[in-house]
Every structure is written in C-alpha cells, then in structure tokens.
Length: 594
Image 1 (cartoon, rainbow, N blue to C red):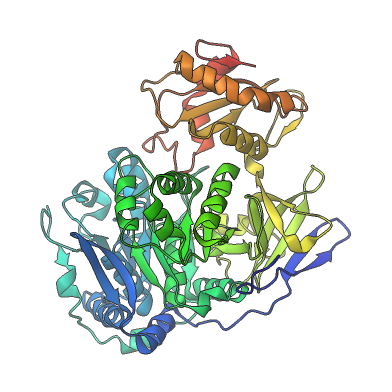
Image 2: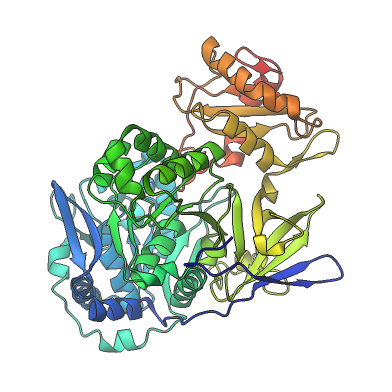
C-alpha cells in the first residue's frame, strides 16, 4: 500500500475511558531548520544557480536563482531597517503572488519583521474594502507593499493607510509617493544584529482567517511552526528530498496552503516555484494553459475546481497531457473532496501516458496549524481521505453523537500560540490540555485498520437539526449532491434548519443574473434528473433532499458571502438570502420538488 518514496502510515493509539483517542505517528521527526533563512542559505550554497522562484515576463519568464534570491533578500532586509522599521513591525502586502512579493516575505523573515499578506480582492473590490480596513487597523502596518500602485490605488487611498510608506515594484501610475523595489534591493542598514536576534519563536507572518463566521482573526505564524511542518512532511514523504521538486502554482500566498505549505516546500527542499498568474476561472484559465505549455511540475497542487478544469484541458490536448504526467510524483488537492470522476480521470490519463499513476493525496489542517496535521502518504483509491498524523503532532479524537464520527483537535510544535492581540479568542481556541479546537469531524477509513488513517467528515458547526430534533450531517449530503451536479453546480448550500425537510440552494457554474431563483426549464429538468437517484437512496428525512432551487445571483465577496479563499460563507448567504430560503421551502416558481 506504500511507495518506496513514502514512509508507511503507522499510527499509535491511546484510548481513554471516555472514548477519546489520542493518535500519534510512530515515525520520529526528522531534522528541523531553526529559521527559513537556514533553507535559503543552504540552497544558495549547495545549488546557487538553480531556479528558486520565477514569474512571467513578456513571452518568457523572470527566473531568480537561489544565490540571487539570497543577495536580494539581504539587500531588501537592510533597506527595510534603514527606513526605520524595527523587529516586530508589520508590512501589509496588498497584491498577489509575484517574485517581488516572495523576496519581500523572506526579507521580513530574515530580520524579524512581520509580513501580513491579505487577499488581493480586499483591495480590488470596493465592496470588500471594509475587510482591508479591518486588517490595516488591526495590525497597524509600518509599511505597505503593492506591486502595481496604479491597480491598487483605491486601496492605498484608504484612511487606514494614510501616511504609511509604500513599497512598489514600479512607480508607474502611482497617486502617492512610493519607494521602488529596484532601489530597495540595493540595501541600506547593517542587518547583522537583527538577523542574529531571529529565533524559532520569532513571528514571521500574520495570516487572517477567512472570516466565514465572524471577522477574520489574525493567526500568528512563527519560524518554528513553518520549519517544523516542512520537516514533518519531508519525513513522511522522502520523495521530496530525493530530488528538488518543481511546481507551477497559482494558489494565493495570503492563504496558508499556497503561502506556507507550497512556498516553503520549494524553499525547504531546494525546489523551483514557477508562479502561475492564471486561475481556474473562465477569464484566467487560458493563461494557466499557456503557462502549462512552458512549465509543469513534479508536484501538482490544486483545489477540486482547478483539477476539474485541468483535467478537461488535458483530455483535449495530447501534447499537454504528456507534458503534465511525465515526471509527476504526486497530485495534491485541498479545500474540499475531489469528485471521484476527476480522480478517475487523472488515474486513467496517467496510466495511458506513463503506465502508472502518481500518488494522489490530500492533507488536513488549518491556518492555525501551519497547516498540515494529517497527511495521506500511501496509495489510496478514492478522494476524501486525509491520512495519518504527521510525526511530532498529536491528534485528539472526541466521539461525536454519530457512531464512528469524531471531533478532531490537534497539539504540536506546528500549532499557533495564539491570535494577534486577541487573548479572549486565543483562550477559547484551546482546550484544557492545550489541544487546538478545530470544529472539524473525521471518521476512520477502516476502523479495523487504523493505519489506513482518517477521512474528512465535515465541519461540526455546519451541521443542524430538523424540526424533529434529528441531526443533519451536512458534509455527506452536500458532497453527494455536488458530485451528482458536476459541471452544473459551482457550489451549493443545504437548508432546512428548524424545518421538517431538507433543501438545496445551488450556485450554478453559469449564473443567469438577477437576484431571485432561476427558472430555465432545461436547467431545472437536468438538475431534477441528476438528483432524483440520490434522493431515492436516502434513508430518512435527515438525508433526503425534498426540494432544490438555482440562485440567479453568484455569491458576493462584497457582502461577505464568499471568503478570500473562495469558500462559501454559509451563515452570510443564509442571512442575506433568507427570503429565498423561505421561497425554496414554500414551492415558489423555480423550485424543484422531489
């Protein structure tokens, strides 16, 4: 069941009288770097000319080697100190992934400053400026970075950023004075003392949570958290150290998946990070395909909707398909379960091209866990499996009301110490044994064989009760409905809390426009046909969809219906569209009744 390039999953289980389980990996944790600078120095010395980070530049790429990156990081760190910034000061990053953004992040880490990357949507969408204002007032930045001051001009004009110095990649189009990266890279103050003072417990970044149920919380991230997590992953998957990895990646650095997991995986292992300036959207996916035509990776990270688009493109293009699968060690999805038809398509194509299948894996963790706590490091045959505890972490499973379902909590050196300047929320985030309370639920893949690991079973906070008092486990119903509606539904919400039936409000891939329920007969009949077999298999009112409807208006970032990660803010959608929820259960025009 295991690959020679992964360690076998081995779990030790401590069972308590109340049914609580404490899980640990049987494998000892490998060597851990003290700070991220250790990684940069190591590879600048060992492979100075190897590409570390690259971005599109005209028809080609701007590639920065490890030796160049170290020189630039040190120069930029000296310039930041020369501007009067002191250890602990925050640098607010408004723009998305870029070489300059990456160098700035490492420069702040090098001398004890703190980077605060926020979702670029907060800057570019006027309706989301309140989130940017909240972040700025929370962290009180000593400097702001925006690669393009013209594009981010409205954000830079917010009162919360008045008087804060601005660093930019260019001065073109700037509405206020800016410092230019080319000048900053020349250096400034002596960095020796500041760099020597950095320790594993020095804060390196503040990542804001998605704010799906409240205002975003600022998660303190330290060198120790990030360095330990990469050591944990590499211990479980020696393939990462067998040869330098390479990725073409679009995942945003304001989120822990792209900015801590993927970025640091390349840096820790001497890998190459090619920044994909496309995204899995109608407007930007053609750019991703153009980039894939020039570079693919030994690893492929994505969210399910991204893999769906990639798979469709590979199915149409034999050359691209061959390029993608040749030399591919693993595919890795996060954010939601990968639809099984996408899983099967990747399996089929890989066999056609190489005669074998790369590892197809997932993981589990949160912003507060840096992020990986559980990782699949063996071959599995279906999606939804999140694997075994990584070396050095402890996982607490607390029995839920359902047989075989557990609430999952985590403790270890990769877990945050707290939220930025929020003692109350920090205290509420941990139990009396110091385990971080995640609110997620899991089940054993095979209770008779614990080493097979765990499968994700939804968020406990999203579950609700029907009028009868019966619990509804939302994740299973929602996942099955999304699989049935592949290609039609971008996402959906299960409704019915306090009612006597379940419903589904569907966000279509192609919204019709307007603010009500869609009434296109062909679309509704297609949905009815796809969901009817699912409804027929239901075992009772808590698993059976009684009605469904299609929303005409897509989720609004400005109204906080969608988080910076792209996930639905279920509470916000249900509150803003309460009248449509009532209409769904009252059989209004456009409602499908089963």
